[in-house]
Image (cartoon, rainbow, N blue to C red; front, side, top):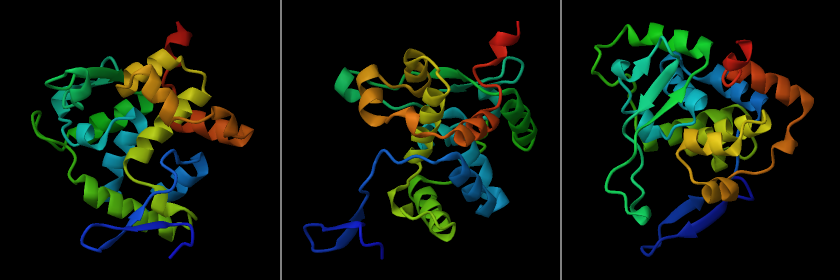
Length: 211
């Protein structure tokens, strides 16, 4: 057991683990190493989260009919309800996809009826899978990862590429204060990291520059 893994006990005396770094994200080489060790059947859900920055519950409610393959976007309709802000239901949001990822999803969606959910899984099983694979991959602080850290990775990559913070907040469904408090400095990436980030993100937020 890692020496820096924080352990606590609940009221019944049962021991459980606590993440010590909730801002942890994937460096590009870590993400590629992680994907390489995943079974083929597990890749689509995690890749969707990586390419959109959505929450896992948002991803698990995606259907083929939610995509607009002509415009390279997807509508997230099952979103988080922010009760503290007086919301009674989540606000749907439509976000862009890269050209390459759109083609990949179009091919994947051919296996499903238009109204069927295309991903299977749960938050708990996905988190357990991630920790198991990351430990196998030799990521030293694998215990700090959960499905939510894929979302943080997406936000950090967009920040590193110089995308406007307001645009990132709109995409992720965050307000400005939440984004600032949950995401670190993008200056931590090396030049090699930056090249890999652009390779992974593909033409997301760059297509408009062609016209």
